[in-house]
Image (cartoon, rainbow, N blue to C red):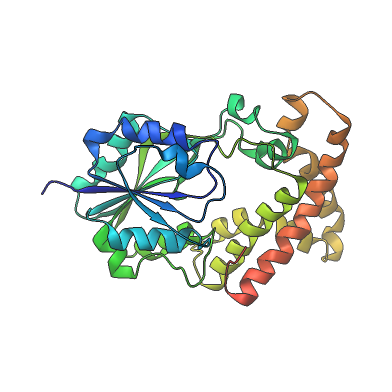
Length: 310
């Protein structure tokens, strides 16, 4: 059976990157059948930049978040394969072909991609955005994160779609993987994307803490819902919290304190090696230290309230 492919593109204040992403999508017109854009109450000129793109457009009057946007578009879609693409990535036609190729196997429920934040893109960010994403510079990561993933629609329907009761703007990807892998295969493909992020000057120090709170709250919610499979996954996800908790163990205080000091510098090392040193750089270890407590607080909050709301 020939696959009928629907692309779902959630859009929220993506003015700085949406044109580049749509250009990539248009280059793949022969590989998909339907494009649905969900405008999640954008307040910039994102929608104007869609122009004459051939797409079904859903407009929200208020921001609902990713999971509800995904679900609304999935219910409206005609495709039996759903490809979710975020507003701030670029890719090639070959990458798209690689992403959808695994679905010739009927047991495959998800195919996913590799994501890269190149140094030349990162260097366009302002200081605080550079700081927050420094750990990802030139790091090739793989996994389901919603940026460029394909799903079998029947499998999504079987498990009840994305969990919009517990997730607003983060964590829904980890949750869907945990639920889908019990009914089929997840394939890691060679498809590669470049993550542009939102390239503007509005990323402030406050946004650094808001983004960390958002991710940590999602992690706490995922833990409460039992979405972690092994100790390694837990350690990698909650290493900040673990660093702080070790301080409570009398014989390990010195070890923990040493690791925290190292973390304060090493976590954002490209800030010291790839940018011109300024007085703001003196704040980096203290900001990273404060982010440890931010992560601990909001992980606990997500666990207790069993919801990601930020």
